[in-house]
Amino acid sequence: METPIFGQVAFITGAGYGDKNYAAASGHAPNMGSAIAQRLSKMGAVIVATDINGEAAKETLATLTTYPGNPAHTSFALDVTDRAAIDKVLKEVYKIYGRLDIVCNNAGVSSMAPLEELTEKEWDFNVDVNMKGVFLCTQAVVPYLKEKGGRIVNTCSMAAIKPDPTLAHYTASKFGVLGLTKASAIGLAEYGVTVNCVCPGWVKTPMQDREIVWEGKMRGMEPEAVRQSYIDHTPLGRLCYPEDVANAVAFFVLPESNFITGEAMNVSGGANLI
Image (cartoon, rainbow, N blue to C red; front, side):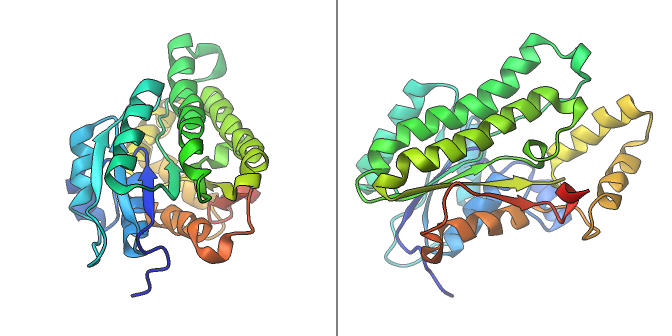
């Protein structure tokens, strides 16, 4: 097996493993964070899996590929809205490994409501985790990545390309991630740091299972009819899987991608086009 990023240390937020039963039944990772961790570990990276649920982050470690000569993968509980906590974890990471090469800002949340029914609490929760969390983590890792260069890959969303009126708060947060990605790419280029983002479409996860219930109530549809509408509006004719997103992240961290920065890769099966 090729290991193009052997020995590189990849710090991933929102990388808790999640629903084991779902993974066993579906044959897919239960979320994007764990899928990214699995994909990068297969490529030879040493994974630092973080999640607000520390036990879930620890569970991800058991699913990762390990190679002789690499140090062990590690996990931490981390709230990406807490800058002091981010700094504390990064100091520990650097103490353990002495390097940081790849940062995947993946932690995210969602809720759904028409604009006029959105609460300030929902707005703050989505914006704080989805956008402010990316900002805080990006700012915190810069001193480490400046040493030798590195890669930052942010998890954005199709919502940043194709706004949804039932997701105004989520859409706004992801527009922010897209803008921050592009601005960071310019600001960090002089240090040899590339910054890109992936924009997943309708990803089949337990989170989607919740979302189709919410959307079904608003649209007067059965949840599975909502899910079928996602497929019907995807030219490639299926839902996105976490592994599809992980493969896109993998592209951005390959050595061959070292001249690509400030880009947003749609991982939607063409759904962003219609």
